[in-house]
Amino acid sequence: MTSSSRCAACRHLRKRCPSDCIFSPYFPSTNRKRFEDVHKIYGASNISKMLKDLPVHLRADAADSLCYEAYCRRKDPVYGSVGVISVLQQQMYNLQTQLAQIQAEIAVATANNNNNNNQIPPQPYFDGSFFPDQNGGPATSYDPPSTWFN
Amino acid sequence: MKNQEPRSISSCAACKFLKRKCTPNCQFAPYFRADEPKKFAKVHKVFGASNVSKILNEVPENQREDTVNSLVYEAEVRLCDPVYGCIGAIASLQHKMVELQHDLILAQARLACYVENQPSYLDDNINIIAPNTDFQEPSNGLVESLNYNSMPFDQFSQFQFP
Image (cartoon, rainbow over all chains, first blue to last red):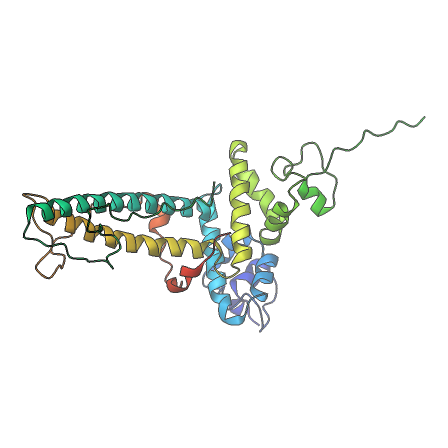
């Protein structure tokens, strides 16, 4: 087997690449950096074990997700992909807060319109769960996300 | 009389797991206490002790506790979801954010209909004419770069966080 046909993992590990190499479908020789990153964080042995423990049809996604987590950890050695989750969760909470505020304003405006017999009737554009009840009570607001990472 | 060696200090969870002597300057001891054996076991299973040690050496000492906590969390999530790990959670959050942003656009447009002297962003069929996309784009470049096309977003709706 020529060296050019070895996968990125076997090239990096300087070993022969057998026909049933666990790495070769997911770490082609055209992208050596991909394996170097994931090897640096998890180690070839752990990657091999994780892939072998999975059904074949799920290994590609697993390899991709491991590579992405390794990429996140390389970019942010302290928090890795958990830092990304934290940022997204905060952004989501901000959006929920904004949405709840606007829904409350809509509720007030709708109540005022009803009182003034405004021409624009309230029309549900959601499933109706976010609109106030007929007594002008507050619209339902999003529950804040649970903090599952301190 | 032979001098007796001083009693060894209690091994940290890492050294107990690795079955080695825990030295006073053990790198793992501050973060893997003996009463939390599972914590190190999870991290070791996913990353390996050697890789954890390398990662800790790369960060300043005052950030090592946070580093260990994030590694433990990643390991836990990976053990719960061996295929997608934390990326599953990220995909789920991104999906929810897209939905929220859409809801926010509609709500702002709807509110505009009620505000005096404000242009309506909805036509007669409640379609958006000029959406108010007054959102802050994610400032974290890493978040923006997440374009994980191979991830089937729909199946992450049932993801259970540990």
